[in-house]
Length: 81
Image: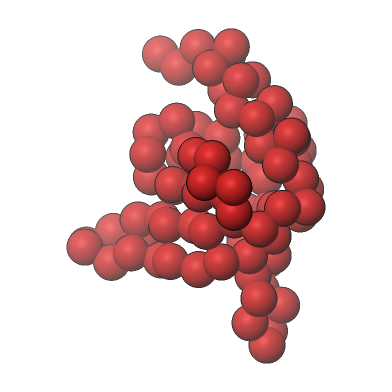
């Protein structure tokens, strides 16, 4: 079972990077990988939102559990993971 303090630690770390550029690498299943750069826009109790830099101004949200289970990898401009 995932411990709440691990999820809270991930959320606090993301809160400290709000508004910063981030590179996202996410598994889409069947060997497909989603890779883009954007800005960490907002954090909520269960999810966080990243706005990507393409023409559509695409926003995507993921849960903190996705980060915990390595389904989503985040790399900030400062090299912090």
